[in-house]
Amino acid sequence: MRKYITYLLVVMVAFVYLSGCAALRPAKEISIVQEEYMVKTPEGLDIYVVGKKLAKGVPSNVVLMIPWVKSGSTLYNLPVEGYNLMDYLAKKGFAVYAVDHRSYGKSTKTKGVDVRGLTCAEDMKAVADFIEKLEGVEKVDVVALSFGTVVTVCMAGKYPEEVRRIVLMGYPHSVVNKKVKKVVKKLISLGEAGKAFIPSKPETAKGLWYSYDPVVLNKFAEIVNKRTPQIPTGPFLDLRDWDAVKLLPKIKAPVLFMFGDHENFADLNDAMKCFYNFPGEKKAYMLIGNGSHGLVLEKSHDMVFRTIYGWLSE
Image (cartoon, rainbow, N blue to C red; front, side, top):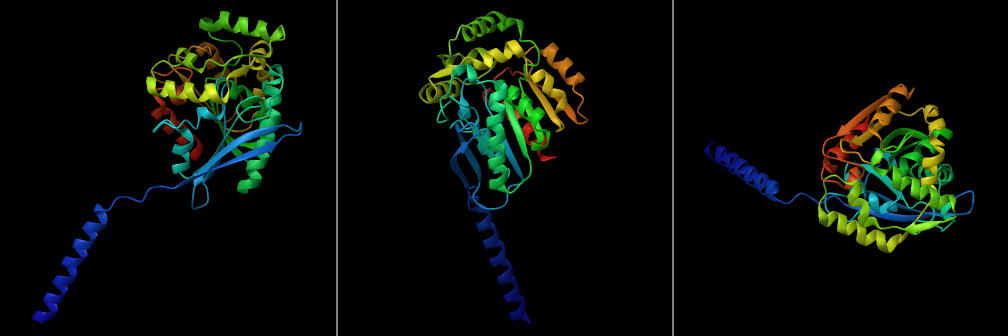
């Protein structure tokens, strides 16, 4: 009997010891795979798409990320620890895809004045169809910032069955902030005069970020200056014509409108009116403290990331 008890004690001690050793072992690193694609549009353009997801398992969500004027896909795929939204959502089990608009990065170069909300919406429709086929889903979620929100509204308004849920960050609905009216007016006049492209100057993004880490801004500027040294004037003509305004009411998907409390490009009074007037059954308005127009790369980005994840997880 004594031998049996001794045997049990030895087994128990060994189990506790081994369990402790297992607990001390470093957690297995989450493995994310990245793939790059060129998606052909009905116009025959090639749109660059970068995708990320876990190496194993079936994604819980499929997300299309549409960027602003200054960057292309770099906005969401910046190689700075903690500031990469694609990595953040991929680690949560999402399959995420970010694009370079036409005339950006690796996508086909077109006339700069043709880079508009409505034309890019058709490009994104082609990308959404490609992603849906690739992942075996019927709809995609969409995350967008600034000009990307205009494109998103145009696409989701024209093709409401294409989108499951939407996040619009810094959406300029029908007017721009008084702080940028003069600059926007000048940019519109350049487009109207036939000036197709202007220098990108991504370092000026600091004027659209309220609180930021200089290391993040410098890395952003370094990459974008190489990938997209010029940006098209077409998006500024959207701030003259406001085509997306007519299409917003046609969106069927739940929409999260997100702004920084120091927003200096979109007009927050206009944003609130837009939110109240939007007829969608499911909608939310989120104001991020100490944030501005570049929400995903500012110091408050952690709140932005968690909010996006929560909204898309429903």
